[in-house]
Image (cartoon, rainbow, N blue to C red; front, side, top):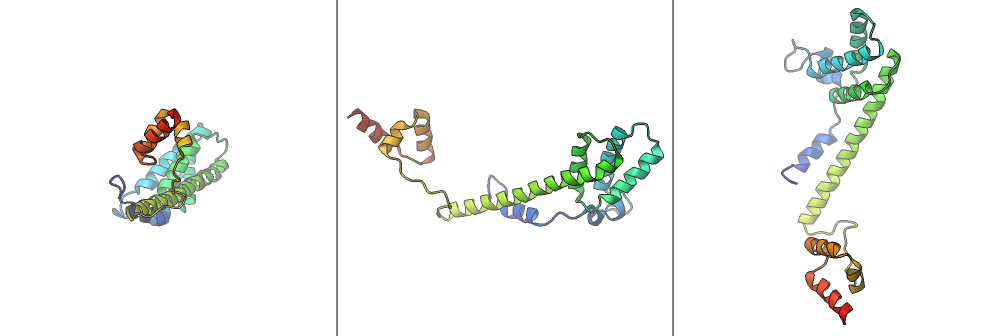
Amino acid sequence: MAEGVDLVALEALYRRPPAPLRETEPGGKSLRHPGAAGEMTTGLGDDLAMIWTKFAPTGSADQADAWIKTMVIALDDLPGRVAREAAQMVLRQPIRFAGDVDPAIREAASGILARRSRARYRIRELREAIEAQQAGQAIEGDTIQPLSPEKIRALPPAMRAIGVSIGAITQDEVDAALMSQAA
């Protein structure tokens, strides 16, 4: 636990690859309520409708509907949340042609998935650091060399105070360093 967050559970969640939209909402339908449209599929359709309106404002409703349905199916290999976030990012980019949308969404999605991978790595590092600290073990790169009196004197007073507050140096060490300067 870190600040009330179960890092083991969070890491497990990020370790599991996100399922594609075609699995979480087969045929665009909700798994919980098979007669109802899936939330992510509906949202992706709404996002795509805005993109369509942006690059083809004079297109007919039938053209827009056909394009949106085609794009939802074309993008159903992406996880729903990732596809939606990527589509919303693409909405903010200059798009001139319908053929530019799919590759732009996929490029944005790859960045989102890369961020997810980095988050998983950082969560694991945080969990391991907390576990090592709780076990009283030193963390790689976390060893603190004692500061010489010269280095303590060279620190601005605010940095010395921070050093004392985090336990990197003691108030006695600071006092001794400052006294040795006066002597």
